[in-house]
Amino acid sequence: MVRGRTVVAMRKHPLFGLMVEFVEPTDVVRAAHEAYQAGYRKMDAYSPFPIEELSEALGRHKSGRLPFIVFGGGVTGLLAGLGLEYYASVISYPMNIGGRPLASWPAFIPPAFETTVLFAAFAAVFGMIILNGLPMPYHPVFNVPQFAQASRDRFFLCIEAKDPKFDLAATRHFLEALEPKAIYEVDE
Image 1 (tube, rainbow, N blue to C red):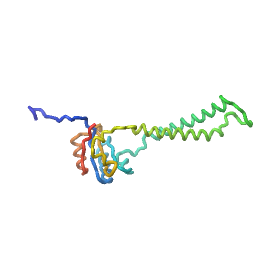
Image 2 (tube, helix red, strand yellow; image 1 turned 90 degrees about the vertical axis):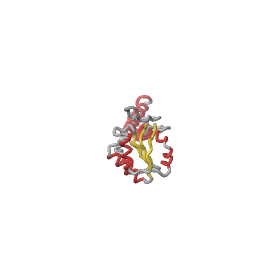
Image 3 (cartoon, one colour; image 1 turned 180 degrees about the horizontal axis):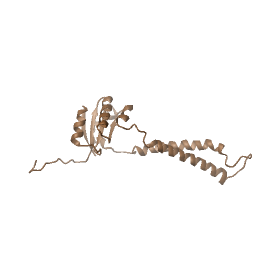
Image 4 (cartoon, one colour; image 1 turned 180 degrees about the vertical axis):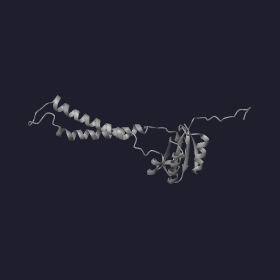
């Protein structure tokens, strides 16, 4: 207190969130599950290898938007393949060979299938890149020096300050109750 006012320490950089470090993979899964149950939604976990239960513990068990993007790419590929074949066979170069119709739909099926698969694959690749926010050459969690262990033998859970339930003191107290190896403040 300074002359009847509370002094609040000013941070040099805005806070991105709080991150906890664990040694065992089961601990980070348990922590993510408890954080989700406590109402935290803007959080992410980092691990040196895939952990199947972790996405469910983070509340990301829904399939999301990618299946719709891939389906849209497939339908676009089908229509593009059929349209190209129709244009080439009926409009641009109409040749009646062997008495077959110009728009011979059974002959159009294999190339149209291939363009469907091609467009769906491109939609999947570019959809994943966009939905994952890539390329991302910088992320605030790299400001914590101990985070380098995430690619070796440590497991991290970060609750972002943008989360509606985030309160620095309350969230820190909640994370301390999870018994992590360490708690870090992540600057933007």
